[in-house]
Image 1: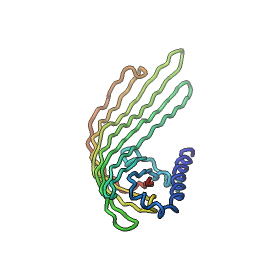
Image 2: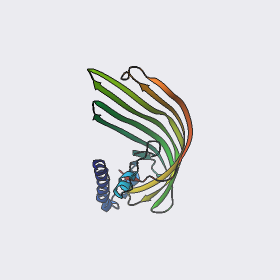
Image 3: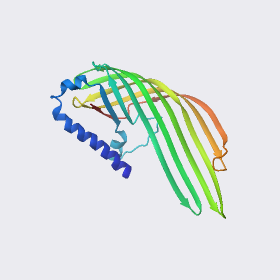
Image 4: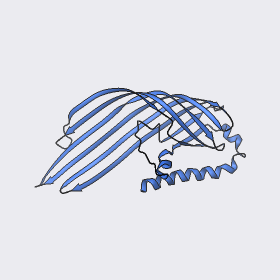
Length: 229
C-alpha cells in the first residue's frame, strides 16, 4: 500500500507540474524551441495499480524507469539515457531460523533516436539502444542454536548486455508535456550463474554457469510521462 501511495504521489506531482506549466505554454513557446532537455518517467505501474491491474515487470522487460533525452535544435534527433532498477530486502524470523532475501537489479541504457512529426499532436520516433543488465538475487538462511550459527546462501545472478532497435509514438498534450509509448526488440547476451554456500559466504559452489543468447521483442506496453525543461 505504501509503495502504491508513493508512486501515485510521484505521478500526481508530475501532473501538478504539468498543469502549472500548461497556461504558460503560449508565452514560452520560444524558450521551448531552444530547450534541448526532456525528462521521462515510466508511469505504467502507477496507472495499472491505481486501476487495480498492477503488474510487476523485471528489468529485462521494461525499457527504463527514469531517463532523459537531449535533442538537437530542430527536435529531429535525440540522445537518450535511462535506467531501470529494483532494490529490495526482506527478512523473517521463525523458530530460531532467520531468512534474509535481497534483490539488487540495475539496467542502465543509452540510445539514439530519430523523430518524425506526423501532426501538431503526434510524432513518430525510432532508433537503437544499448543496455547493460546486472541482476542478483540472494537468499540467506541462518539457524541459531546451541551457540552455533549455521548460514547457507543461495545466489542467482544474471549479468550481460543487449542492443537493438526501438520505435514509438508521442502524443503532445502541451508544448511542455507529452506522453509516449514504445516497443523494442533486443538481442541479449546474458551470463547466468547459480551458487550455493554452506559456510556463510566464505566459499561458494557453482552448480550452474551458462551463457544465454536471446532475442526478446517487447510490444508497446509502457507509458512514459515527458516533461520538457
